[in-house]
Length: 73
Image 1 (cartoon, helix red, strand yellow):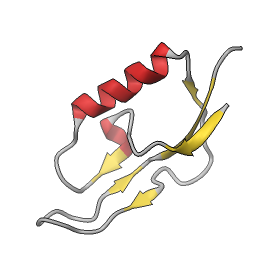
Image 2 (cartoon, one colour; image 1 turned 30 degrees about the vertical axis):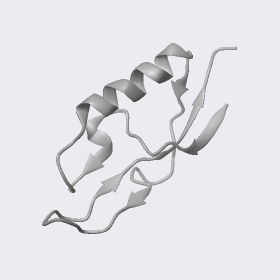
Image 3 (spheres, one colour; image 1 turned 180 degrees about the vertical axis):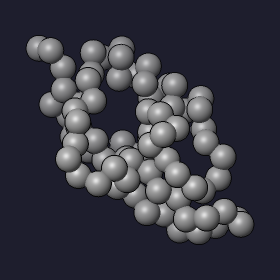
Image 4 (spheres, one colour; image 1 turned 60 degrees about the vertical axis):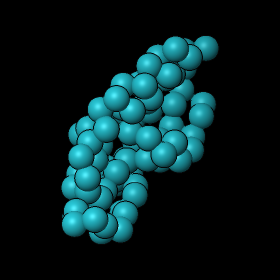
C-alpha cells in the first residue's frame, strides 16, 4: 500500500476551476500507476484534498492530490 500526496491527478475530473487542465500529465501519472500494477483505493474523504489560491485571473483551484494505491500482491 502506498499513501501520500502525489501532486498529480489521474483524471481531469479530479480538478475543478483554476487554469487549463493538463491532460498529458494525467496520462503520464496513470501510466506510471499501471506500470507498477497500482490500483487507486477508493476514499470516503472529501473528493478534493487541495484548495489552492486564486491566481492569474483564474478561480481558486480544487484537486484530489492525496490518494492511496494498492496492488494484488
